Picture 1 (tube, rainbow, N blue to C red):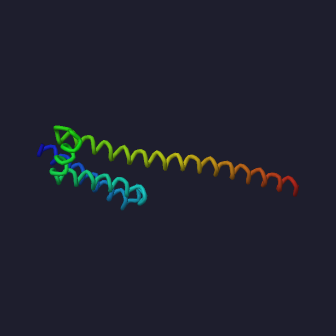
Picture 2 (picture 1 turned 90 degrees about the vertical axis):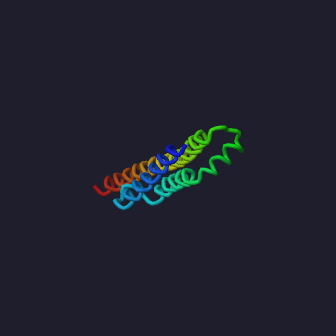
Picture 3 (picture 1 turned 180 degrees about the horizontal axis):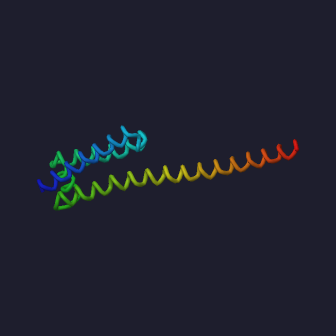
Amino acid sequence: MERLLLITTLLAVALIAIVIVSLRRAHIRVEYSVSWLAAAVILLVLAQVPNVLRWIAVWAGIQDPPTVLLFLVTGVFLVVFYRFSVIISHLRDANIALAQRVAILEFRLENVEDGRS
């Protein structure tokens, strides 16, 4: 289990580093980086405090703490992916509304130009 926790720690630190570098280079916006940083910190805490994993395993009736780690990591990332799905849906709706507004403005502009000619 120690090897799994070490690998999980390294992956969490790598994720934090990647997000920070991407943030500094403006590849990712701050509001989106928070979700990834929170997920990486949760992953890091779970990897560094194995007693929490053992306690959750006992509480959930799971005999193997690495299984709990896998379950929790999957849950955390599903929450992050769900949040991004909501954001993408909102952006799609906003794009449709914006395209409709542009079409209305183009129509009005054409009518104004036709009236002047």
